Amino acid sequence: MTDRHRNRSASPTNAFGNGNTIRLDGIYKLIAPVIATQRENFAKVILGCCREMLELDRDIRRRYDTLLKFETKYRDEDDLDASNRPKVKPYIPVSLRTKLSVSCSQLVQKDGRCSQELTEIQTRQERARNLHEAYKTNVAAELKGIAEIEIKARRKLFGYTYSQSIITIAEGLVIIAKNMPGRQPLEMSVRDVAKIATVKALSNLPTSHWEDARFVPADGEKEFRSDAFIRDHITHHNIDENIVAEMQQSTNPTEKAIANYVIRKLGEWWPTLTHLLWSADVKRDHTKRLDAELSDLFESKAIVKANKQLADAMETGADQTVRPLVEQIVRRKMAKKISANKKASRKKSSGGPKNQGSTPENSGQSNRANSGEKAKSKNAKSNRQSKKKSKDDTELSDDDKSAASNESRKRGRSPKPRSILKTSKKSKFLKNHDDYIVVEADKNLGGCLLSRDDYITRAFMDHLGDEHVYQRIPQLEAYDRQINLANRLKSLLMEWDDNKLISQAESRFLLKSIEPGGLIIGFRSYDL
Image (tube, rainbow, N blue to C red; front, side, top):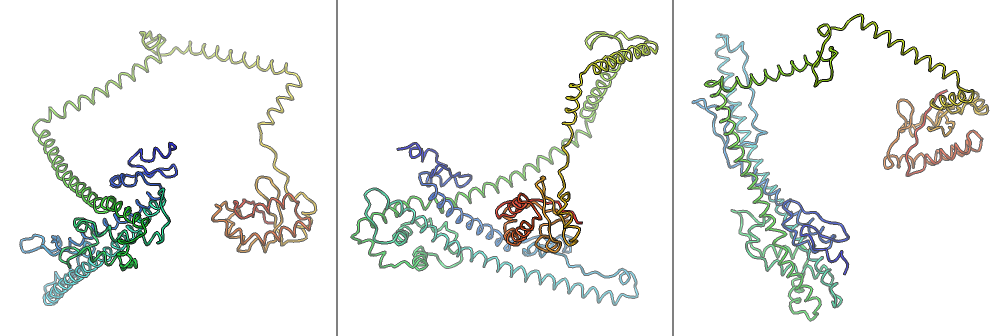
């Protein structure tokens, strides 16, 4: 047995197949014992089934929480009662809580001669507000019905996913069982054996499993029974109940042994992969919500308490709180200023290093006479060095000068390549044909002639920018366009090659640049 097989179950969070690992994070660590000993491809299938069912379960939970909001009340800040307090109203989605803007002009409100018209406007305003409130209530009721239907649809999809997942995993178990040493060939198909085994496995599940399944009807709906779901499972997958009954009395020991193996494994695995995983996820969400609410409560209280203590300290003991801070800042500023002054005085003094006492001359001020002498000595030294350098240069041999000249030339840029217009044959052709332009290739690899009509066609312009420069684009993006251009360009290049308008090297370069699968080569173009 190799090390790879011995270490297959070394880590409970990894599933080893072909040497790669499956990493389980978060809530999925719960199913690690189930898939730890399975091959990588089968472990991925199990994980995919669990993830699909858990996502549907989470979606139903979120939508059910939204549906429960329709049973609550909210305070309308825009609608006040006689006590100037917000009215408590049935829940309305936030998107519908827009205040109706029905205003009356200041001219009518302030002019007493328009009192009758103002009364009529106010009556209609109140009627419009009532209609708007009724509209919001009716729309909210329709949205509640839509939310209920959305949950119902997801429950149905959840049931189908649950039914398909158990058959998928059962098929994998059948494959594992039939490849065990000493097994005889199966007379039935793998899928039929898996379907029959799932019927028995679902019948053996406890009642608590079905209570935690969110694809069953909720409270207030018709009572759910496990046998009803099993019948739907049999009908949906076209399982013959007679074959299920015959399996219990089958004379083929291989099929019966494999079916019993699948039933036993599903009995061990299925609760962990389904309702235990869902319950753990619900518990984790509840813990997160509880921690968030407690954190908001106590952090807000701590902030209020800290602000109150600060305000009290500022009122009663400002000297004990503010004065030490001010003194500390002043001391730091003064220390920085003193340090800067000391550094400046040391720079102007003639004393020793920093750790020695300074001995400034003339109170730290520089002497003009001394400074003049220093400048003269410095200039004399510079002149001596320049004379010595010029003398050494004159003693160089002619060979050294030639080498130095070559060295200096090497540092410059290389000369530009010879333009393709220098060829007399091409220049003569261009003079006689105004409808041709020159396209010069990048990286000094030569160039070619293009017909102006071909140059300005849409096929070329798709690849040309404002400066008539080919854009460099990736392989996948350029592949389709290169295929369409390939035949046309090849025929054009072959014609130019036959007429000796371009060299063979230029022809090979351009043909290579339009081969499918490569990158489009950039060109510089010049209009004549």
